[in-house]
Picture 1 (cartoon, rainbow, N blue to C red):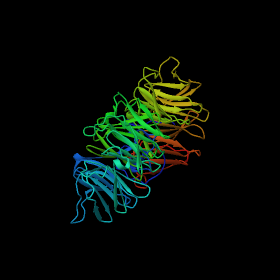
Picture 2: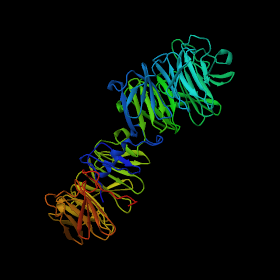
Picture 3: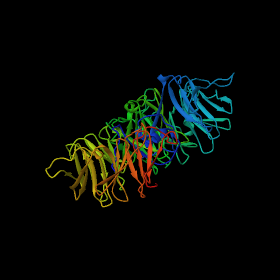
Picture 4: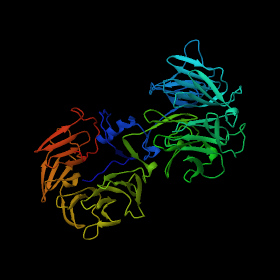
Length: 585
């Protein structure tokens, strides 16, 4: 049976799962109705094989007034709440509502500017401010006024101790500090820290702490700190040449150091040594990097000051910026929550990216145009898409195209079908073509005239191809037109399917069903008063019973009797376009 879809903007793939759905009246297929309802379902991680634009994306912008201040950092506590630190306070998010957080009466944070947050394993929320650190747990706020300075980053070690790094401090205790069992201890030059101020802190998968200054990075062990990048220019008062660090779960550490050049180059630490990795697909100078992050699937995310987000995994690079819906191209932080959702903090809002059971393919992912008119899935896994001035095909997750003027014999692909031999049949403009082994071959009348606009294609039990083209029903064998049938009924049939018991089934615009075999037609009248909806799609079961769709019904003909499924007796949507039976029946 041929497959056609209404002209639209994207093609979607469904990866399984079910859910009850209620939809408003609109011209959608049952499948699309289900797909739309599943847009809010997230998985436990991000599928790294999808492009960023294929994830579900939700944005909350400061201009919308959902939260005061500009977001700086985000974390999650063990109770599931998300916490957003801003330049004027702390916000709690329950997944639906944002609410400004205030401590109990008589207590306050030492500074309202929040620069770092960490949800600890014991349920605590550690709050790094513009002056010192605080801990919120079980309704109680504890401040540490003995510790001065701006707390830039936080980490929790394997024993539950909190570690922090700081700048702008007024004491001389050192830039790296720990808090365990309410005991505060800091580390400076005497303990091996080679710089007076620290901006960055990461715990790697081996439990080691990486401490970043303005120019140097050191691997901390009690009493010593092994330094890297010591040859960098020392300008802590004006510029941080160490732009970001990130640790992955595979004992890999990434670092961005300032360097000239038209493309991104990062340092990668593996097996005890640093190597340089060049990313020719990321045309960004290292000085534009603001943050690095490695997610649970080992994908590296790069936040920039002017170019949005980049993601690198193996040799694949993807990009996402304000043209894709990012609130700002100035990216501050990344965070991945317990469910695998990735959160992004920009200068003008926060975003989350999450997996869906529906994968969409649009021009952003490589469709040649936003006018898909037909789609067909081949047994080999290739998905063919009839598009405007192109025949697109999706194979192993990659979109390619045969374009008009570069192989495609026309402009508009109307209908697609693949026969038992793997040959693709398609209607292009007002002609029928067969595509086999990279070549197109036209099927025409003996005088060379085209068959007409192709509305439907199928293959019968004898492997003959049947085509509803122009006003006719054509039988094709060996790539040649063998017989042609026409009637007032045939000329109004736009749905066509092969009957496994022999012959064909045609659906008419008046709702009637025609069983056609050996040149003879048997009519099954719609017999519906004031409801002569066009048959839009057909599926025939092995026993010869027929499923069909109209605008607002699913119909089934069995033993000559028609029964309808509508929203009145269980159909979840009343705007239907297509019907398809999968391999599981």
